[in-house]
Length: 128
Image 1 (cartoon, rainbow, N blue to C red):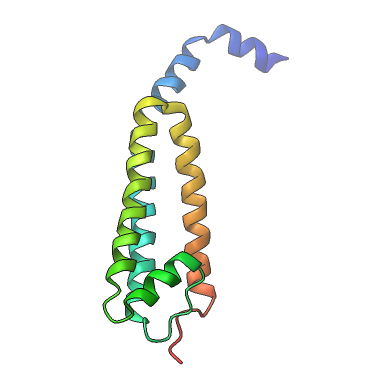
Image 2 (image 1 turned 90 degrees about the horizontal axis):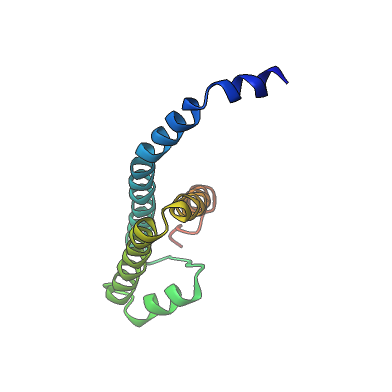
């Protein structure tokens, strides 16, 4: 119980760690948003580059690609709209629910990390 007694004697430590976390939160949210956008752009570039032999997994994106397979205008607009709406929601959550913003950003970063690993491992962008 020595550790608990030490913590009771140093109440300023909680305040110090709280201040550090409060200052690091915007940096973490910014880095998370940049990572989310970067993975989305990378995914879009892969689809655009390999559009002849694309094997898109998402049925809605597959439909958008089929609407205009030559220029992918509908797919690119949908991807931009989706990514922008996610980033705008992150900003909104960070302004009105700062505690939730770290949890939501972490969940999205984990999802985008798994998508990035999937894009690297699975050969869905091979040209037939």
